Length: 372
Ligand SMILES: *Cc1c(COP(=O)(O)O)cnc(C)c1O
Image (cartoon, rainbow, N blue to C red):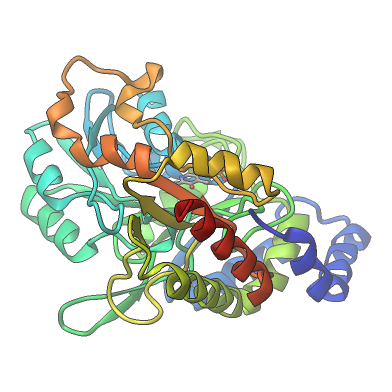
């Protein structure tokens, strides 16, 4: 699904030098590399504060802690996403409220959000799924009308942009009150271990969060709030700071691969290619995900595996049906889209090193399978 070795080989000397610098200086934790990467990412995103942390799941949890959400507060998020999103809501004893998504872009449904709001609702967590922003304009309007926080889960869409109706463009992760991201190796900006970050334009919230990531300390050995230990280590920061200048190139390569896939599949009956909102740089294709109808999806997965073509089903089970998150308040009739998507989606290899020949092999294998 990903080719991390090919990408490493291209920047090997730079990455190795940067990692060796960390080893030589022994500033393994909170070293200058972490600060440097933080500043460079703030500049890239156009956001006031980046707070690095240990992984994307922590980033979400810390963002919610920073907002002061309390047990029993309801947090609305998408039913069709990676479990980390709902996991941290539950872990903090907040009440997850899973809602359906759109059939075209797989992102949280605005109608479903509106329907799910109660007097207990305190926050909305849109997940910019597969590399494309949720409808942030509508989400921010709803949030303002109901006095809710918006926490963007930007683990899959770093470098994507969103265009508002007035033409203003913003980077994914800079529109809500706070955002989280992950630097897991296979993400669009990945390190060589675990890593994550929180973004916000709110000075006071940034201050609160900087303490939370460091055991609730604002002054050495004074613990004002209950915090956590969540750090991005300097070696990972060295990798990330080396890769950041390449992020747009990496995302362009993903988009180019997606375009070649699109061309091959666009006229094939039974296949729906991924919908792209907005203009050319809106989608950074963390995943390239087809919907297949009237085609044996699981048979296709098996066939591709036999041909040694990697593929994935993200996600095979709606979160509201996962044992950990079942809730008698949910009504199956409220999840028609997610319940269908889990049967129809298939994600194809997507990374920065795909070449035209590989894509041609993948697409022709799939088309041959469909044509029997
Ligand atoms: C990867 C991912 C996370 C979690 O990131 P980790 O760094 O693995 O903890 C959270 N949300 C979404 C949508 C993700 O894809």
